[in-house]
Length: 322
Image 1 (cartoon, one colour):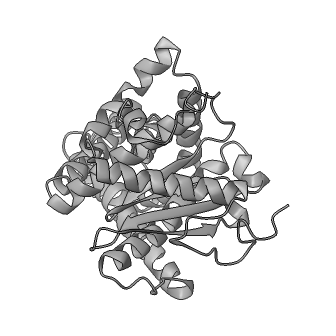
Image 2: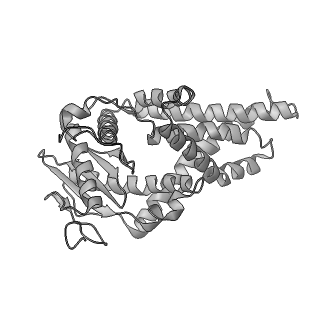
Image 3: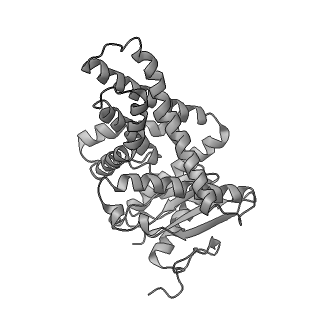
């Protein structure tokens, strides 16, 4: 009976791949599991900030920017931990001003490359091909800007995928997706069961980013063609709104995959994951299983695996939990 599938869990878990490891985000905690250079597994589990678990996190549209911010914050923390594990410096942490500076720089670089740079490119076209001051020309200019942005995004993913270290991260990405899907289907967290699933997942963060790019094309196409300065400002100010809409699209798609139209709309997101995931080795699936088991234990108040770091703040699972 223990191997019989359960109903899909009420809470849908998610995660990210990191350097030689996997992060899984749970209901109240997140866990990162990584493999040391000696081959041993290690993990850490910490409580989620109330911003990521409170009622605002469940408010449509508003939750989109929060999810985006959460992804950045937890992603950087998880990368720092896994990177330190591979360098055998597990005691080092990035917090406070250091975290804020890292986040600000990461966000600034992403906005500059994927939102501002395409505007400068299309601004050159506005002086020639789209020089006519008509509504149609303005819409076309904004659409071309969005297509340039999408091209930058796809080129970036393809280029980093040529790096051997990133290809390993992409394999961990596949392991994370497969493990999450096995959990969602109520199957045991064991490699043979996890191998049944695809490395693609409809709620993938990469799918979220691609949807942001597509929604941005539709929104910006309606804004006309003001001066370059105002166009840059509008792209930055409307990013939270676009993230909110994109998140609702991804969330709806993930809940209605049985609908043929939804499957058709989701096809590009799943296709893109052929670039961002790889078939993992069994040892990489083992890391993803460890991360999932650790965060499940924390969420359910059970004792943590012996190698798991204690949560910073909050109640330690298994110690006085009612």
